[in-house]
Length: 376
Ligand code: ATP
Image (cartoon, rainbow, N blue to C red):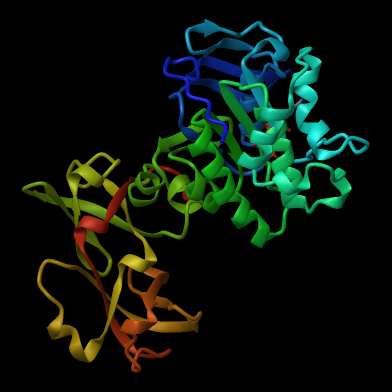
């Protein structure tokens, strides 16, 4: 099995103040970003947010309007793509149709004048689990297999960094899910830095150790998938990664490490450390809670709810059974449509549309956002 271990820092990617403007339009605002060697890093964002432009500046396919790009200690800002220790896999696999799979993968070695390529190519085909397909032509492989050939071809010259630009975009959903796990396995095995561009939040969260969420040419938040999901700093991130309930509230007082807030439906408590908004008394905060973190109790049993939970009253407006869970829409004084997901193993048969309920959750699962931001 091929392994490429790089004990130095040559696979670090460091962007310092890089930006890209096209005439009067700024596609990427000055950006500082460090991707540590050996990590699986995702640039995540909606179409047009500047993620591909950022990737292309790392690859050398786009000249930054300002700033520098370092790979390890080397300033590569003005180096052409072929002189950088990086390679890119695109959504269009761009395989050579007339060459078989072996020769497609061998291409980069032969171009460098390397004669004995057999062992390296075989090892690489084994890495991407295509050892049996070496003598087939690209059109005889499935989309997922062709994408694996593209990855093998990009890795054969031992780049320090592999850039992936929506590489799974052309695959159907099932294959996409399989390939996400496959790419993660390959990255772990080769141990080099992967920088992956995607607009699919589930894909970024499945594959990457660190995700940069981009919005309108800026990195809105950077963190591990769990961090971003559990503790978003902006409404954009809260809504882009999954569903969030955002409740308008006002800071009332402080109690130890917690802030006590007034909302239309009553009092809510939030750990101060989980609030990215100013917490002065009277300040406006959007109190966030994920739908699966909320428990639903029929109003008749409200007395059974333990103390110390945030609570709101409401009425079930809609309930959709989706197998493992039921997704409820709740009308409440604080918000017309609160989303609540309840695992069906815990479902109470009285929780049907029209039922009066109490929603309750742990303050520890609550996050606070600056209400002065626009709600995306
Ligand atoms: P997508 O997923 O659709 O590729 P993206 O987040 O990767 O989106 P970019 O391709 O980086 O976005 O483009 C960012 C912005 O820069 C877009 O508004 C795009 O129209 C603009 N842009 C990109 N390339 C050029 C160019 N050569 N000339 C002018 N504007 C450009």
